[in-house]
Length: 260
Ligand SMILES: O=C[C@H](O)COP(=O)(O)O
Figure 1 (cartoon, rainbow, N blue to C red):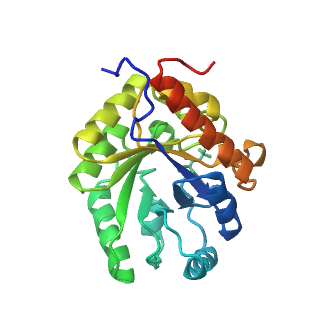
Figure 2 (tube, protein in one colour):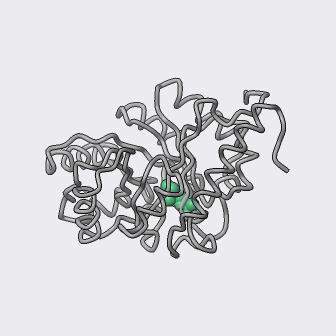
C-alpha cells in the first residue's frame, strides 16, 4: 500500500546529476546535486564515458577534491563481457552501475555479472558500492524484469537499485511503471536496506506524482541540460531549478498540498 500522505522522502531526496565530461562538473555542483554521476548519453541509457574522459575526470579530482559521492555508469553487462579489457576505475568513484539489457534468456548472466564485478575490483584493488539497474521498459531492453533485478541485487548485496528507462525517446519512467508498482519495489528494497534511485527522463512536473512514494535518489540528465536535451550540456540553472522544485515539493507535500 502506498502511504496516504504525500511526503517525498522526509529524509530529503538526493539529487543525482549525470555529467558527460569534466566541464559539466562545476555546473552540476553549483546547481546543487548531491551525487555526481558520469555517463556518455550518446552511448545509450548507461553509456560509459571513454578512457580518456575517465582519466581527465580522475585528474580533475586530484586537484579539486570532492565531498559528495561520485557514480559511474559502466554500460551494459553484455557489452562489458564482449570487451576483453577490464576497465580500471579510479578510487574517487563510490558507486558503479551496470545495465542488464539483453540478459533475457541468457543462462549465466548472474554468475557473469558477479565475476565481472570481482574482476573490476581486483584490477583497481578497490571495492565499490554496486547499483543494480532495472529498466522500467525491460521488455524493450530485452532485460530481466525489475522484480528479478531487485531479487538479484538483494542476493548479491548491492548497495542500491536504480530504476531507469532503457529507451530515451520521449517516454518517461512513469509511462512504464505505475506509482503502485514503483512503491512495491521501493518497499521491498528498503526492507533489505537497499537505496532506491529513480530516473528516466524525469521532469520537474513529475515530482508531484512522485511525492506519494519514497525514493532515496532522483536521477536526471535530460532535465539538467540545456533545452532538456540529454546530449546537450549540463546547465547550472537547470540543475538549480530542479533542486528547488524538489525542495518545494517536499515542503508542500509535508503540509498536505500539491503543486499544481
Ligand atoms: O541516472 C540518471 C540518468 O542519467 C537519467 O537520465 P535521463 O534524465 O536523461 O533519463
